[in-house]
Image 1 (cartoon, rainbow, N blue to C red):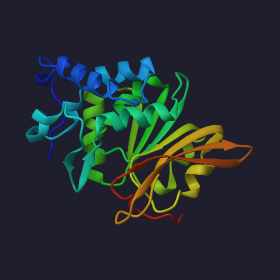
Image 2: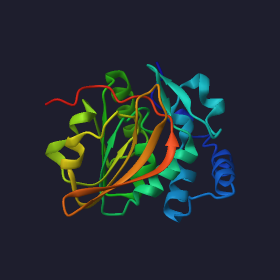
Image 3: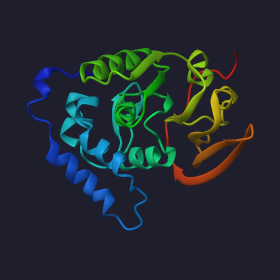
Image 4: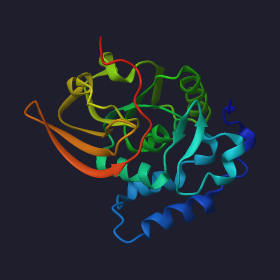
Length: 225
């Protein structure tokens, strides 16, 4: 099991590696990442502190890595892309479904007012909470729970990011989104091609746009209250 970050990690922040990683995907032809706030957040977030020790030498490659319990930390360029598509604002309250290692929540933290993140695997939820707290991400609130049900007592949210793939969009998440809010979510069974969708709430209805073929771990839990 991956230990939380410790102060001993900080003398080697690996800033040059982070900058090289971000530069690599910004320079790709057709790159759709341009928001300077998101680029700065990607350059500042220490991805190596969110992954197991035996994987840290690969922390700044642009690909997913295992974090235990059958889960992965997402490809950094995909994290940046999904964050940009969500259009987070400084005053926003964001719900994240699928905390995983806590890396995506850490990227969102400097961009918004509050991040509420739910993880269904208790060991991951506990580990992410400790890591995020040790690194000073004080506006990130985590809990162990069923992401299908969202976080109703903290709703409505300005935007919702889902980092695991349900076969259908959970109705509870739509209910917890404010008017004009956005959801970015991968949808589809694990054995078939999945699609990343951006949804916007307009007059109580969801406008849905497919934006990218993807492959995510499945969302587990129950859609029943």
